[in-house]
Image (tube, rainbow over all chains, first blue to last red):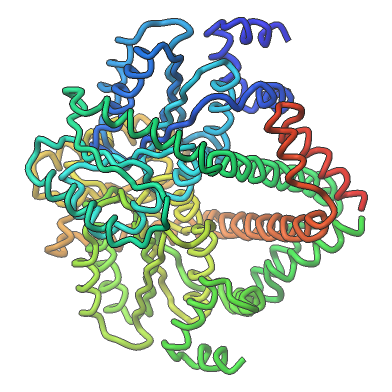
Length: 314
Length: 314
């Protein structure tokens, strides 16, 4: 494919088109992704998550700058809350992204969370693979940490920065266990506001009471003011330390292997669904089955087992 | 099962245990669900969604009261934002639920959105089936409208109330298309606050510009103050009107049939995954495959196709 040649020559427009191709699941996207997959694996994936209004994009901005200054190539995937309810007028923040040098060094892509017919986590993963294959050293993945899909996105990252702000104190209070589970590094952002110290202290105390294995990673809590770039370098250092830590301990590889297994399984399931719908769709009277379920004569589990058995035999 | 007998006799503790059994996917939960499925189908499922702080639980409260006064049996499933980030100190709101009469008339259950290893939408659907089979006339399903999983939950409802507040004006502005897609009825709650009229007017205008088919449902926009029960009755009437409308038009049945088909497909996919892991798990060297992918010698799509082919043959 000519576009792939241009992609591997570093043509950023080819990157954009290939990402769109993949997002749209247009003809041949699986083969395309397969090729990209084989060229990927080197980019570090850093997740940045937190509530709307926590300053995630500013932190992404700051971290991106830091890596760019370091001579790294940086790609950003933002899982945009086009859902009606996550609030946060992110558009203003996005404009600031233009400050970055254009060209192959920096690339920003936002994912639509709606309209895409499901599979957002998979789609985000696919875009990450494209950025990786394109040659970005660092991929920053920004997402609002709500819901299972977003957790799946976060789960695919090598390291995760959870951003909280004093205003989210109540939520943090209720949800500590969940926070601890996700975070590799905490950023207490807008730390010049009232309540920031209490929030940081509170997180620290909870982390201390958490039973932790010897030689385990100690989750750092960094107080930042992202709009003033305060402590963003320190935050970046902690992120890098975590990457080093998991590389040494073997967790980095182990986690990536788990991700690959999940991907294979999801490919298999999709393949099964496709074939099932093709093969049995013509042979069975789905409407009649639904009729019987609606009448309470059978149920989806029984029907599922029967159909599965007949699929296996056919 | 003795517990099923007690369940069908209306024992609310049996209901609670059976729901837990299903949520935990404990032994035999599929058979249990199958039985419940065959006894379900009569309860109306009303979804209430909106941003944190929009007063969803107060609206659920109000609607529940209205149906209870009407002699209906009401079940509530709240998909609790135990995710760190949705904010909203719902616990306070929850306590008010105790105002309701205890016993078979009213039942409240909150779902954990974390900890449950995926499948939240399915789990919520299962609980809804249990409530339905238990004999509740109305099931109110409350969820924060963020993310694909939550949209799946909402999709399973017969009718959906989207709750917005003046404070969410900006988000509404950006996300109108998504809002229109979900809502059957709008509640502009906290309508005594500044900006409420503008928000309602704005929604109204957008709805008018939306191309709508003749005889299509006209989405009503009700200004409520849920804490004062203002216009909650009107909101409830509109919900009832929508139910009547879709029953007359056939959409009600059509939508339920679609849900059943989705359920069957998801059961089939899970069955496939189980069998795949069992049958091939022993025969193939998954780690060796992952090794080759990590080295860029192959990719998950190729591997997926190969494994799928060998699975089909075996």
